[in-house]
Length: 355
Ligand SMILES: Cc1ncc(COP(=O)(O)O)c(C=O)c1O
Image (cartoon, rainbow, N blue to C red; front, side):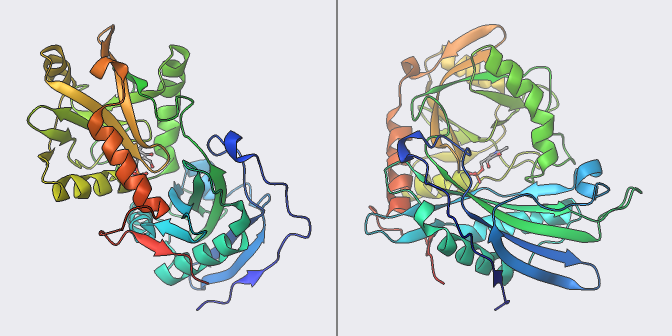
């Protein structure tokens, strides 16, 4: 066990109304911060009042974008207990991402201890209502001040917490998505498979333009503007009459924890889930023939979000009359029931808060 020093707030903030949480608007009273320096190892692990970090203006994160983050959730179950959903999955993905962008990942024990102690310190922030949770944002940044282009020899690891409700203004209603035919989010050999901040910087302009046109997110295509990659902050699933398809992990798609959970649930139900390359032209052709029954996105923030409209080639293509489909409704219920403790977790995904 690392010694994590604690400085708690003297005046806790007022809690936001749980019916108006939205997504990522509020931060809790505290944050966890730990530092790493080459030759010194991890040091100064602390829980302290949420507030500005002191960072050198020459820090590599500010110039060369050495930033990586995770997104995971804790839930308040009906009996009041607090649980995490798949924290090891997120830890492992952080480690893979850190290796790719040359940052130091914290050891698993430090990550888990910081996570549990921070959530315990801010437990009152975890909302009780259905469709609410505590979103957790572990983040790594390169903090060495040095202007040559090379990996930072110093890393800061922090965990931030934010009570959240629905991710989209639409709630769990189907969203409209824009197939992006000009901009690219990621390319083979790039950073697309890891949760580097740079991927999101690359995605902002397309998302902004799509939003202005009335679309909630962007459907990203591969470098040929043909293969489907993912949807903004979600992995994509297409339900055809004879198969359920999600794009295979090709090195430029993020390996989503929710994607993996949905694949496991579908396999357990003996449903025909296939991970393969799927093109936008196949989706549109099969939609046109009436073979596409449902489409949905999966992600920690949105859980499962039905896709009601795909804009492609100057046309809005409607799926399932823009209504919630039976499979996405069932999967949403199953995953959220496991998270909230209403359904037994046969998968080993739920980790109770222990301090
Ligand atoms: C680009 C991208 N793809 C997919 C996902 C879904 O991943 P997960 O289910 O782990 O949240 C996210 C969200 O984190 C994302 O940002």
